[in-house]
Amino acid sequence: MPTCTLHPLPYQADPAVYFARIRQAPGAVLLDSARPGAVRGRFDLLSAWPLCTLTPDAEEDGQHYLQRLREQLAGLGRAHLPAGVELPFAGGLIGYLSYDFGRRLERLPAIACDDLGLGDASLGLYAWALISDHQRQRSQLVFHPALPATERERLVALFEHDAPTVAGAFRLAAPMRGDLAAEDYRQAFERVQQYIHAGDCYQINLTQRFRAPCQGDPWAAYQALRAACPTPFSGYQVLADGSALLSFSPERFIRVSQGEVETRPIKGTRARSSDPVQDAANAAELLASTKDRAENLMIVDLLRNDLGRSCATGSVQVPELFSLESYPNVHHMVSSVTGRLAPGKDALDLIAGSFPGGSITGAPKIRAMQIIDELEPSRRALYCGSLLYVDVRGEMDSSIAIRSLLVKDGQVCCWGGGAVVADSQWEAEYEESITKVRVLLQTLQGL
Image 1: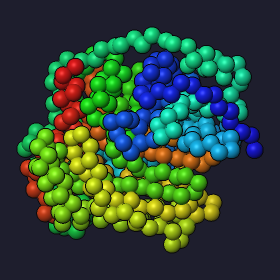
Image 2 (image 1 turned 135 degrees about the vertical axis):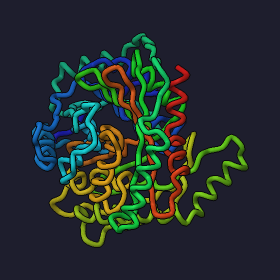
Image 3 (image 1 turned 90 degrees about the horizontal axis):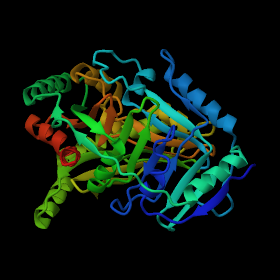
Image 4 (image 1 turned 90 degrees about the vertical axis):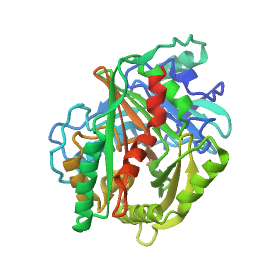
């Protein structure tokens, strides 16, 4: 089997040093572990100039689109990394799936307004990547065998020579405002409660959107937000129309490594405090909360079922339940569900059987998505979709695109939400939806 070639570069802890050289190139994309501020990530991955970009056709079924992705991976060709090299990507697909890609996989109503016009998916096929390994403190170019030698030489020259970093600017033209007034949120919350008591569902993730007119360079906004909110599943993607996706997600959706599968749902949140004693008390209260444990367990059970569609019988396990992960603005309750791919199944089968992630829909999933479409006035677009890569070896990692922003058509949008269950209180849930994105709103307002 063909082998990728590697070219070492000076190690950079901050991917901005290298990404600044390609950020205006077609298909520029960065998957950023946000080190050193976020301690859980290991690799940064960036690329540009895809061989092609795949978006769904107007009426294309989700399964058909995923099959086209498989065919493009096969066309690029399987390839190994050199012996002893441990890197996440050997060439393949990088991009996003919007929450609304789920409409192509399941029958859903079309009630919520599609006022942003973001495509349901966009994944580029990349024959190279620059990957930084923060454990080993190495940065290197990875070239798939299909990449011509002349292109390899161009990329080596681009990244080996110092280049000035031109700092752009970004600012809001007005304050960020929510689309739902508190009273509107309360009414939607009460409708959810009616559905829960009627037995339609057990849990609904209810979301509100914030937006403002903006001007300037989204990359400048990304750098400021990354400093304020470092998370291990951050990312930045430039789209063909000039729009930009900015994500600061703490949540893994699905990872596949050598056939082993993991998903890490987040369900349960408390605000951080500047007082260490109060901060520790908030974390302890979260971990002891019967309500949050029940919400988390509902989603763990949902994801066990989702993974079971593509994993070997008996392989799905829950090795971690109700753990604490802390970020600059919030504490989260996190669990882990693992499995092993069944023979004949691949990473894209997992997407087909599990997308969108159950932690951001509710349970049961399809009914929850129907209720979301009824009660949220606008489609979620990027929010609760996924930034992901799938490589030619079958490796995949993907996020749940929470704490994410879309800069498009002169405005910036972000979203905040939370799980509503039978014993939820609307004021607390409304405040939680703001708490989750407060650091993003405040940072943008300060630019």
